[in-house]
Image (cartoon, rainbow, N blue to C red; front, side, top):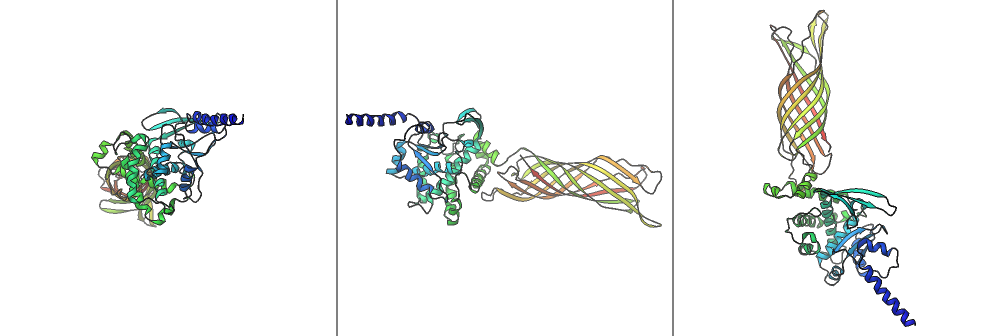
Length: 486
């Protein structure tokens, strides 16, 4: 009887495993959370812990041997709120028996997804998300927690690609870290790229330049790993990422990866640019903040020096200093050497004329005008975007264009004559030239700044009669600062 009972329990043990094996990923975790765990995978856990212990505050990541038609993937399961690496048995067997660097890198890559926060609810990886709709540039999906609360999220293609590259960078850090008993060498890196097409189905029928909505091309990933390999040869740089823990302290790596990706995409030659697919164009435009039409907020100051004369005699006048404000509209990407932009700004102008009378120097007239300046300009930029992977780039600029001075309000006062005639100011058109300095950020939404010193000679109409020989110019110097938000 006892033997029969043991046999019955033994059979139930294997039956439970076989039935549960049909469930995959978090579905299996949800079932196990309601049942007694029948076994644990200590061999896989030991390998995962080896990578996690490289960090100052090791995260707890649990490997589980039941994947969903995928060799390996990372996910957080709602049933337990724990971090899991799901894998199939052939993957683990290769990892244990052959210990190929391609397999070790892929495992480190999936652990990195957890450590960088990519598996949090807003960036949920794995098959558990409910997709609402998918377009060329984004996926909308909904999650429902155990309380029944629904929340919708949007994941863009640039986010997905950057997550893969960030996980590549941190995964490489794990396998080349000097604390590893078996540290990867540069010759081992090639094995990674031989393994990726076999481990990731998105690359199975593609060449190395093929990009998908979920993954960057193998070519880009190879370039990234080669770049980080050279960085990791510096011991000080190796220490840089040890503080990354469960989605914290990763900003340096995140920024570094975006700089790299932006550099690769915007420095592609004309032939390569023409071959970019829709996903790559979206990523390029997002990361480089490439905009055919842009609007900047403009603030600054203006100094105006009136130069007046009547019948060849100089008329003394006071200078004017005022604040300016407005918008700058432009066409053309900021990183190209040529573009067109137009300033629309409002500024006040007040100056007085003076004369020597019997009792000394007296103010004789006052001119108060509010102008709308419209300045379409051609810009030549020397912003150096070719600095090696630098996401922040600055340089000198020069500009030449026209300036239209449209008087919005005009007041004239004569302190000497009892009866005087106010001369209306007409719209003036003249040229404008200037030099400037620009500072741009490839990835920051508010990272574009411009400082311009502009000069324009503005003609004034002061003669009250056609017979009067009056020359009047307002030499205007503007210092304009502009900044851009998207």
